[in-house]
Image (cartoon, rainbow, N blue to C red; front, side, top):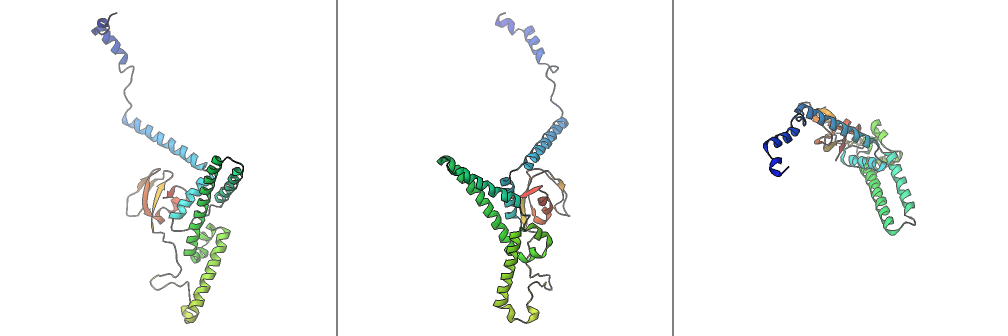
Length: 247
């Protein structure tokens, strides 16, 4: 068959019949596409939740470090992740012995990274303890968040602070003016407390759904990876449950 016969009207029509709608059905309706997107989103969230549940100790400590640095109050102590990370440092140091120079440099960088993370995490907690030591020791909820070493440090810090203030000037005042834990007539408290109404940025780790940030506002849908700025006290419970993280 020559070229003219191939592209003649009859032959061309017969070839186009193969590309009819019967062979290639139309695209699904919009609702079906939306359902498919929702299924993909749900599957992605389930997969990510599974990955989060298998997060290693350094990842857990990194998340705790970020939350600790950005939260106005002291958070729960990640003792298990901290101890396991230090064990990882010891293991890496053993591997460095006798390793090639290039491999040893890589292992040293990994060790330095974890050590910086541990030091910065503990330093952030110590800063908060020194700022609000009396309040943390007076509240059972906060005492449970401190490690044993942090509890001892807080008690010693308060003892030294009170002793210094008394020796410096407090003992020279009348007895009724020597209190260090009084509340003034306008609600001014002498004991420093964290400001739970301070503004924070948070990222959604797991889809929350509709959430009402303020009583006077309409609920907002909080989806995974959304970022919000709000008062810390509003998302305090979500942070404790691991549904959001501070950035």
